[in-house]
Structure formats: C-alpha cells, structure tokens
Figure 1 (cartoon, rainbow, N blue to C red):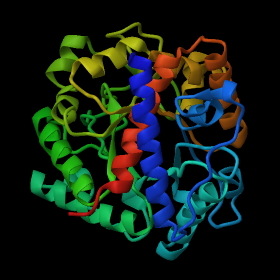
Figure 2 (cartoon, rainbow, N blue to C red):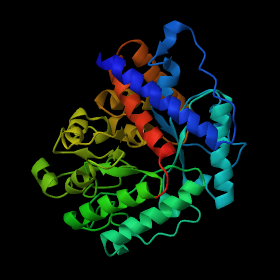
Figure 3 (cartoon, helix red, strand yellow):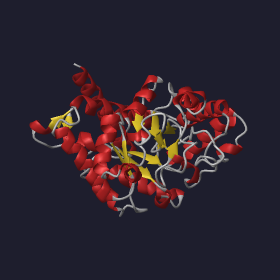
Figure 4 (cartoon, rainbow, N blue to C red):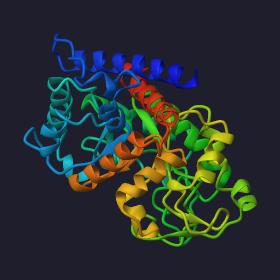
Length: 365
C-alpha cells in the first residue's frame, strides 16, 4: 500500500513538473511518454528513468554544445548543477539553462531542475558575505534578491544557505553567518524564507553541521570530534530551526565521532535518521559522492548505493560523466536486484519530485 501510494504521488508530481517545464521552454508540444516494455516500468515510468531522477549532476561546458545537453535527451537526470565554470555572464547562463531544459523536452524526458552550486558567485548576484550580514531581515533580503537573479536564468534551486557554525579553525569561517548558534539559526531560517520568496528552492548545508571539521570534507577526510550532546547544544540548532520549512538539506561528507567515527554522514543511516527525527520531511541530498570515496575507499558506484540505502533521496555526483554513469548503473543494478527496495526508490522519488514541483510552480513573491 505504501509503495503504491508513493508511486502515484511521484508520478503525479513528475507529470506536473514536465508540463510546467514544457511551458517554460515555450513549446506547446507535450512530452512523449517514456518508452520501454511493461516489465521495466516502475512507479509509472521506466525504472531507468526513475533511477536517473535521483541524481544531481554537474558537467563541463558553457553553451548549447556542452555534452550534457546531448546527454539529457537520453538520460533523465533529476537535477543539473551549474558550477562557477559553467556560468560566465547572465545571457550566456540563461541560454545554457534553457538549452538543458529544451534538450530533456525533445528527448521526452522529465525536465531537470537547474541548481546553482555557488549562488553567491552567480553572474549578476551581489551578496554581502554571510558573516557581514547584521540581522535576519538582511539575510532574508539578500537571499530574495539573489533568487530573483537566478530565477531570471531558469535556475530554480541553490545550494544555500550554509547553516554550519563558524569555528576558528574550521572550514566554514567564510561561509557561515556566525559562531553563535542562535544567530545562525535565526539567519538560516530567514535566508530560507528569502530564497523561497524569490522563487528558488534552497538546499541547506551541511547536516549535521561541519563547522568543527578538521578540514573541508570536499578536500579530503574531515573529522568532527564533538559528542552528540555537544552537537545538540550548538551545531544542530540551525537545522532544527529550518526543519519545517527547508525543502532540501545537503548532508555533510565529514565523519563524526558522535556516530561511528569512520563513515561520512552522507552514507550513514544514523545521520539520516537523526535528520528525520528533527521533523524534516524534504529531500535529503548527499554530499559530493566522488569526494566521499576519499574517506570510504570504495567506488563512486558503491557510495551512491550506500547513500540511497542510508536515506539520501538525491545523489550528488558533480563533474565527470564517467563517474556519473558508474554511479547511475550501480544504483540501477541494486534496484533491479532488490538490494534497494522499490519502496525506498519510491520514497526518494517522491521527495525529489516534490522538490521539483515546488521549484517549477512557485512564483516570486
């Protein structure tokens, strides 16, 4: 019963998203139904497309000739992430984003959600650094104004705000609002409100807080040496403040002595359970799964399978197309061999679909 209910909801959400994306592309033609024999159908679409929807992918290129444009005609990636190297100027970025959306439409695939990895450096965005923002109202206004710039380029999601606490020697000094947990909680909630008011879905980072990590987990294995009680008193407060309003949360790739001390939070079931116990119902986004392999020592394919099984809904694999295909095929095999249940697939797809529907349907306020 749960599987059938999730499947119907996910299919309805994706149908809405595809229709809205078609309108955004300025094409009156309706998307074609995905092809495939009935035995391959899962949750109202081919299982190949259902699995691809669970990936957030980056790419190289700045224009309509980028390889990702061609790939989107055949692979139904759920989210496409624009990095700094993809975005050089407002018009170029808008043209690139619309080319990505149009390519998916021409291939009869669900439209991807276009997200900005670093919205503070996005062309045309002028934001005061978080640590210089003086009150929650300013944090809200900065986010809303940035969202209006992103939205004009068909970008409807952003990896922001950073809800980590600033520690003197930690990796979040330049991106955190403050070293005071209550202040970060207020500003993070206000920023989430601002992004949403501007019509862009914020992806809040990095649960359960990586401000105290020994180094940036994106650069190599980073350890947070705090106990769970210490984290509750400080690092978890901002996430508790946004749990009921954030549409998505990015998991950290740090390892935590509060858990097992060896597994990145992105692929750790205990970390995902903690997030859900805090009342969060949105999409859980993994950290960079290629970077996570520096800690796990496994392949990116195994990291993707482990993250989905742990509770991640959206699997982030930036950059290399080979890594993305390896991760995708590993998850597809795991689903086909029942190492990942159809219920887990349906749950993740439902949350990703809800994020996409909100992003495509939400007007600016």
